[in-house]
Amino acid sequence: MTEISRLRPEIQALQPSLVEWRRRFHQLPELGFCEQLTALFVSQKLTEWGIEHQTEIAKTGIVATIPGSQPGRVLAIRADMDALPIIEENEVPYRSVHPGVMHACAHDGHTAILLGVAYYLWQHRNFAGTVKLIFQPAEEGLGGAKAMIDAGVLKDVEAIIGLHLWNNLPLGTVGVRSGALMAASESFDCKILGKGGHGGLPHQTVDAVIVVTHVINVLQTIVARNVDPLEPSVVTIGQLHSGTKRNVIADTAELSGTVRYFNPELKDFFPERIEQVIAGVCQLHGASYEFNYQRISPPVINDAKMAELVRSVALSVMKIPHGVVPNCQTMAGEDMALYLQKVPGCFLFLGSANPEKGLGYPHHHPRFDFDETALGMGVEIFVRCVEIFCA
Image (cartoon, rainbow, N blue to C red; front, side, top):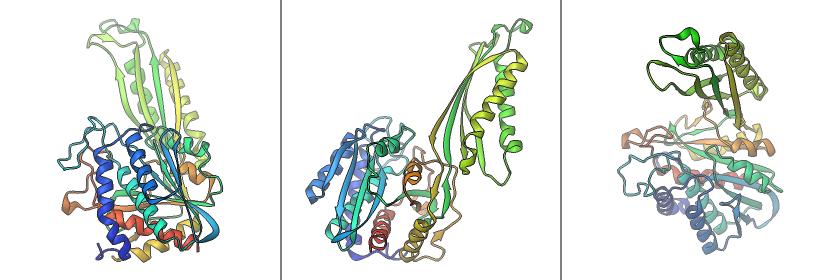
């Protein structure tokens, strides 16, 4: 650990506990707004250490408050707790015991890191101000951040930081930049309504399969021909369902997709243009449609000053050359974005891949796992951010 990062002895000593907590969370994963066991364990630890906290915020969320040695600024640190509906394929002692549920996106590690930050800061309150630790439920598209914000967790908060253990970066690196880090995450569903009939009598029908294939083809021109090439964006069709039998012309077809972009000015463009395409193609073929568009989270946009603070901290923690990576944008989404719309802050990627140990599978993969050495690094980064921000 000390070869690639600079950790104070107290945090190095905390590493075994971080691993123990993370593996407990991993073995007992829970879906969004159902994180009762996770929240109970977090609360029990906070109570054991004498840390004031509130439970059952937005169902299963927790906020712990740690005052420093004197009044000052208020910094929030956020971690997510929920798992995914994935069947785990890892053969490890801490494999999920909850069928069909798995921590395949490192939220178990995020929760363990924030618990470690709580323990350290409570033992070392040599900072001015207050730190609020936000243990958030339901990050995976279920609105956990909004629910926590609506519950008032950002009251009096002046800035917020958070991290994502990231298997797209190697262990010993940090990805941080000002401005857009992660993309807006939005989705849409469309049902094409045609007229079914006999496969040998197509002239009597409005073939929903033909209509939907044309819709998909034209949707792919939106990014290519309607968006500035210097503005990264994505329209992906991930689901398509139609038909019942080879000689029956389908009367309906359903497609679902996702939209990603960095520039907030594109917020209204995509739903309007996608529906225009669908309406135009349907009119051409004599079909109708039903359309639903959902905004899951906006782009994750880091405040310049907070990003510089985090970058300076990362440089002080990581020992390997080029340990801080600025070119780390991704079209993945994160509801940390909602906090960053309310208060200045910074979200960072903490490299956690170690292919030499077989720890390089991507997020949301049934064999996802990460190098637990990164847990102590996460605690160190957060603690140093507190010490600088609350100086």
